[in-house]
Image: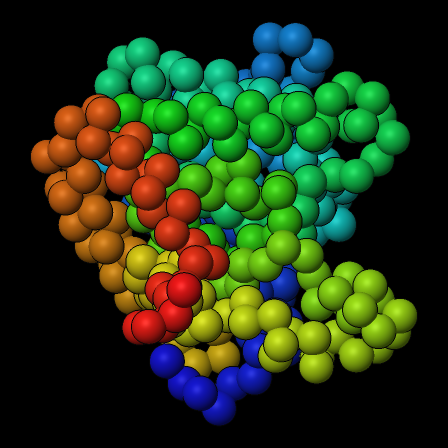
Length: 275
């Protein structure tokens, strides 16, 4: 990975409107995708796309957060910010995958969950918590891919995988650099400085042990051009390897691996001789 690209520049690339939406990843990586809609409680949320598909002949469940390429698409998808209905739809499909023994593959691209009053009234926090709990306990392989922005609990709801893969210009953080700067310094204009401190880039996260793999991108990032094909190919190979690896594990071992993986994050070994 190029070290000449700053963290702030990678944030900009992750948010670029030229970056492929998650539909492009689904089209490139899967066959026979069949969309399933609705949370069976309140309604349909277009910001999360979910369904059944074949990945190299293997039945899988696919869940994808999605932004739009136009203003109309972004409005229909709430700019990638899911409401409780979206997370309950994801939960429904996770439970279905568990019941029928299908691996779960998620694609994450969201600035965070929608913080509106209606979403809070309908149980936004509870819906996210249930998604996290369900994905943590899955006894089928679960792989998570961050293709653009991975923001806050809205991203974590689909991010508790046995393996977490980031594209080179994807970012993953507890909040946006603008929000970080506004809270810490009361000055959102210091977002570039915040981006460096937050260690939110794919390279940072790989070094920290949060990410398990990073997929290289063309210079200047993915933009819908010919160079994207190599990214899809590399990502497909990485998913294939990880599925092969985790499919050999028992259900109990998969859940235990996921639990231990996330328990280790943020911990540091005590120095020799310290109490």
